[in-house]
Length: 307
Ligand code: HSE
Image (tube, rainbow, N blue to C red; front, side, top):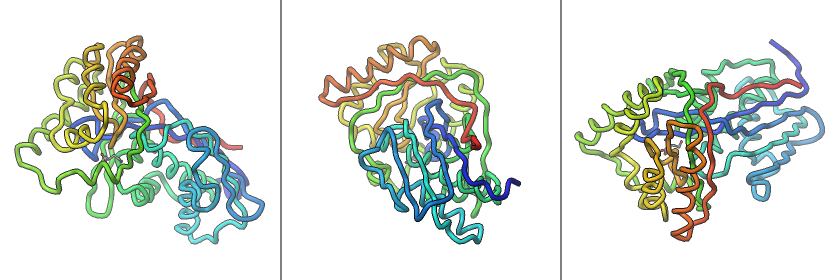
């Protein structure tokens, strides 16, 4: 316990959810980090934002990181702090399918939990984060790092973290406004048994392929029949970018989370840049600006940095 901390800082990784067939169950942490520093004092809640979204993210108690932090105070039975300053350094593109809102929520929960002397363990923080977010796959990966499997069991979440060897990915982040809510609205509420079985068999094989670094297997099993076709139809240039990644040598391609970013898995780190560029060029050819990114998976999840 570290009662009475006046300040702390946390860093939280980007995540990619679903990984093809593992809809709402699989998440992978990526080595792209958002940071937030919390300082008690002053008056009211003041948030400063640098980097992604600096021009539009709220700078008061409406900010998602602040909301999450205040939730921890309430959950712990504490009065909200008279003054709280939060400095956010945001590197994860917003509304891109890279878990940006999960990072904001997890940062707020972890930071406030630290300021209060850690009244809650990570499992409780996961429940609270999933409550905020609605879908636990991104928040589980952000909190625990690595490849996470998460399922709901009654009112609890069960998670398992799987350590994966070096996993290199290429991403294209199109400049499209695309909320998870929109991306879920187009999904069916019922699915055919054959489609469920299709995903059921492939999901553990995706886990096994990532765990063992078997990219040939990954390429054979990272298919989905529950969500990606509907979503790809909503992403202008998405199909072209997908094909471009395959032509450029990607082992497997998926929509990252609920999109609109595409994520391609490459067996050689040196291929990540060219595959990412092939995808972003394909988006551009269809009139959609897209940022190429080459990243690796992160075994570490959200981390507290004191001081
Ligand atoms: N599993 C979620 C979805 C990702 O596909 O909608 C966002 O948390």
